Length: 181
Ligand SMILES: Cc1cc2nc3c(=O)[nH]c(=O)nc-3n(C[C@H](O)[C@H](O)[C@H](O)COP(=O)(O)O)c2cc1C
Image (cartoon, rainbow, N blue to C red; front, top):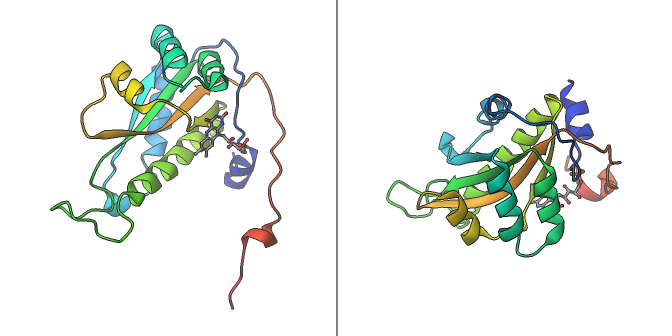
């Protein structure tokens, strides 16, 4: 798939087919996502892929801050990827002091780039995704037995799309872009 076509054609998918997604497919997506750039190539992003329906349903029921739409999104998708980042590395010196005034901003920045790279790779493989920011981090840490020192950056639903939504309207490029010559 052409890169620009991939970027413009990716959509947030909130309704999926029952078709399963395999561990091999998720591995292939992460093989691509790991090429996302990171702070000093520190590569602190981790992907916890939940294929177990029972655990996925438990996250849907207990890990979405009662935002029922995300519960439905998670139940509908064949897989749920919990994208985490190791704390205190991206944006920090080896002794733990922040390198810039922006503190942990760079940890989130790396997570965002990786998240979109993951979604574009999935799209290229014919899989739909949905990034979710509304989740109960402490609950998800417990349900997944996440290691100390990892923060949950986003949830990503993954599956075969059962809908083909129109792109939500974008602002005019002029409103976003200033050319300085
Ligand atoms: C950081 C972030 C958090 C989001 N959280 C949610 C969410 O909790 N639930 C949801 O349904 N969509 C969520 N979305 C999806 C956005 O609503 C969606 O990307 C936006 O409406 C544009 O649609 P598109 O992705 O199809 O282009 C999130 C997207 C991002 C980038």
